[in-house]
Image 1 (cartoon, protein in one colour):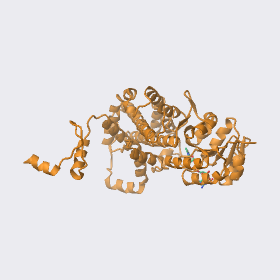
Image 2 (cartoon, helix red, strand yellow; image 1 turned 180 degrees about the vertical axis):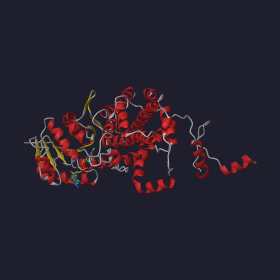
Image 3 (cartoon, rainbow, N blue to C red; image 1 turned 90 degrees about the vertical axis):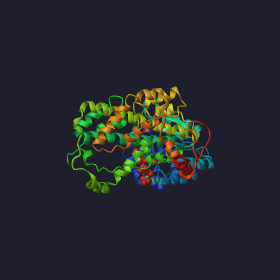
Image 4 (cartoon, rainbow, N blue to C red; image 1 turned 135 degrees about the vertical axis):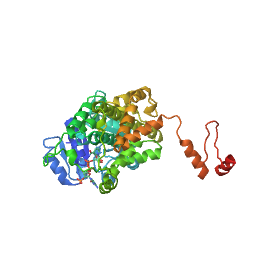
Length: 477
Ligand code: NBP
C-alpha cells in the first residue's frame, strides 16, 4: 500500500499531525530516528489506523506514492539539516520536502536552495496550535515552491482548523514566507502572553484578588471583544489545583519563564529591518529578567518595601472595566506591530504577502487566534498595501477611546510598583507614533555635534552640518 504522505519525527507534533491527516482519509507513512517512538506510536495511538510504520529511511521513502510528499516534524535547527541530508540521496527529482518545524526563516532560504540543486521541491510550513492543534486542526502558513504547495493543498486544507472563513492554511509567498509569518506569529504570542500576565499581576498583587475571582474575570472577558485562545486558556488554567497540595497550580509554578528562541528571532529581525516592535522585544526581555530568580530574590530584599500599598482604594468593578479596555488596546497594538513587521519583510524579501489572508488563517487553530483578527482581515481587504494598521481608520476607531484606559491602568499600577514592560512599552509605542513631533531633533543635534553626522531641517531641503562649539561660542558672545 503506497502512502499519500509521510511524516518524519514522531514526537508530540509529528505523531499528532500524522493522526490528523490519517483521520481525513489518507494513508500516512511514519518514521522516527529512534525506533522505540515509532513502535510505541503504532502500538498505542495509531492502532487500527492507516498508518504505515517504517524503521529505515529507505523503507520510509519506498512506502510513499510519487512524487513523494514528506513532512519533517523534527527539532528545528541542526536535526532538520541532518534529516534532509539523510533523505536527499534517497529521493527523486520532483519530490516534495515540507518542513513543518519552527525553522529560522534564513535556514529555510538556505534549505530551499539546497533542495533545488537536487531537483527537489520545498515548502517551509509554519504550524501553530501545539499538540491539540496538530491533532484536531492547526493553522498552517506555507511558503516556498507554489506548484508543490498546490499538490499538497488538499491534504493540508483537510487537516487544517476551519473557521467561518475557510481552512486555516494558505500559500503565503516565495521562499521563507511561511516560516517568517510563523516567527512573527510567535513574537506576537510572546507579547500577548506577557500582557495577560501583567494584567493578572495587577489583579493578584495590585487589587489583592483571589484566584477564583481572577478566573471569573478572564472567563467573562473571553465572552467579549477580548475573545481569544490565550484569554480562554488563562481562564481555564487559573482554576486548576495541584493534586498533591490542593493549592492553585499557578501559585506553585516557579516564576521563571523559558523560551525556545522565536521571540528573540522576531526582535532581532525587526531590528535588522528597522521596524519598531517594542512590545515583542519587552516580552522577550521580561522572560529573560524572570529567569534571574536568585538575583531577584536578593535585590528584592535590598530594595523592596515591607508593605507595598494595594490598589484597593479604586472602585474594583469600574477598574476591572478599565483593565479590560487596557488589555484590548494592548492586544490590538501588539498585532499592529507584528503586521507592520510582516509588511516590511514582504517588501524586503519579495514574499508578496497578502495580509488579509494571514489574518484569515490566524483566526483559527493557532495560539494567537482571536476575534480581533477579523478586523485586521477587514483592514487589509480595505487596503492591501496598508504599511501599518495604525494608518487604518478602522484600527484608529477601535483604539481611540481605549488608549486612556491603558494609560490609567499603567499610572495606577505604577503607584504600587507593578512592573509592566509590555503594557508600558505598548503605551509608549502609540504615544510616540501619534506624536507629530518627537524629540529626535535633539538626537540629531547631538549626533552632528560629536560625529558630524549631519541633519535635515524642518524649513528647508538638504543636508546640514553645524560647527557646534564654534556656533555655541558665537551664539553666547
Ligand atoms: P521536538 O522539537 O522535541 O523534536 C523531537 C523530534 O526531533 C523527535 O522526533 C526526535 O527524534 C527528532 N530529532 C532530534 Br531531537 N534530533 C534529530 C536528528 N538529529 N535527526 C533526526 N531526528 C531528530 O518535537 P515537537 O515538539 O514534536 O516539535 C516538532 C517540530 O515542530 C519542531 O520543529 C518544533 O519547533 C515545531 N513546533 C512545535 C510545537 C509544539 O507545541 N511542540 C508547535 C509548533 C511547532 P528522536 O525521537 O530520535 O529523538
